Image 1 (tube, one colour):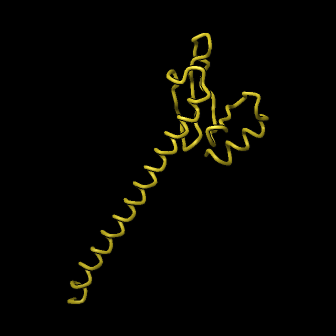
Image 2 (image 1 turned 90 degrees about the vertical axis):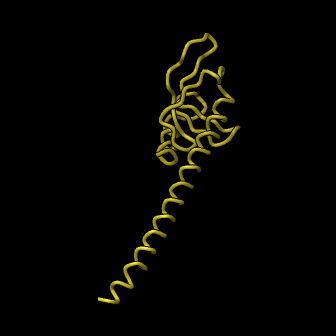
Image 3 (image 1 turned 135 degrees about the vertical axis):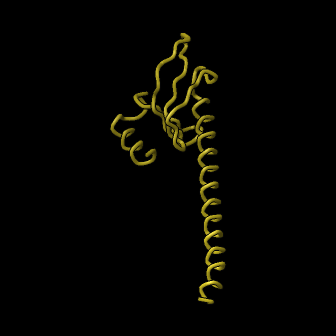
Length: 111
């Protein structure tokens, strides 16, 4: 019984340390996700006609959906995008990538 009393505080201390490390890892992952989303928004904004009008949703890392105004001032509707770099931003059905290849890249990198 005495060993149990001595071991209990040690066990609780170890459990608390484990939670702290898990929380730190979770926080670091959340910060990395926020950074990736911010970078993707900058990349996408760089190729839009009116970047200030951009509305983002369903964003995960460097992928997501964006709605923005066209040259006539009307919103075009939400389109999926993959923003790998400043020079490599691809929109669904923009003619730069085969729709099947886009779907494959989306399934591989964006889910």
